[in-house]
Length: 256
Ligand SMILES: [Zn+2]
Ligand SMILES: [Zn+2]
Image (cartoon, rainbow, N blue to C red; front, side, top):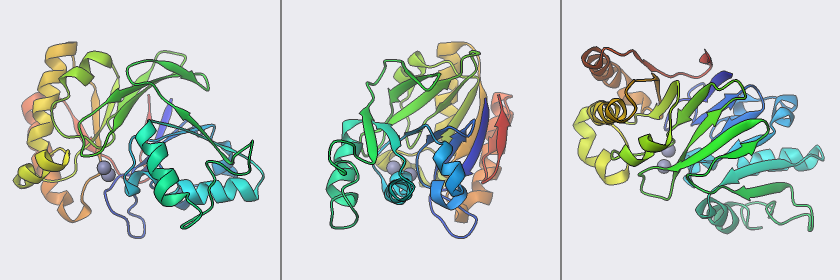
């Protein structure tokens, strides 16, 4: 399984992009950087797009991807929870901001939207996909993606602390986790459902207690303005856990 991080930040400017992962060129998770990173032919290779939650930085490219699919006479397969469908239908694809691609053309809409059932594996394009609820200020799931050869990654999407129940469900070789702000913003992180380095350490302690090991860890969704501070604090967490933690970046490739 080849994972490419297309967007590793919580805001965007030039080469700094919003959350998006690409797996084996065919599966995408979150849509913050798909049109800005992928050519038309690369967009057409996408067999499925999994969305973690409704926030703009994670769904932003869905309207533009849908327009591209419409103009190229192809279709988009999007998977997520009901809250994401509702938000897209109400606010983005509502015939006010952009065409109703969830409903049109009638009978065969541009976006084929499939609801995922949390905590229940489902096959999508040869992968086993497991959506697991996480703790954010909007309804949100993380995704475990397991390839036919048994290699697996878990991507948290946006989440705050309290992931013990989530760790019961997943067993990845690679954990791609959100890590938005440095330790001094813990109150904000707890309030909005995000992680700081210290909060991530507690979650990794809990992971190790439940699963008996630690996976490779890569962080995304960092605030670029505070990235140096985050890097210093994450290095300390990695030292205390004796487990490497890498900061993700745009264009990073991980072979699993
Ligand atoms: Zn969010
Ligand atoms: Zn976000």
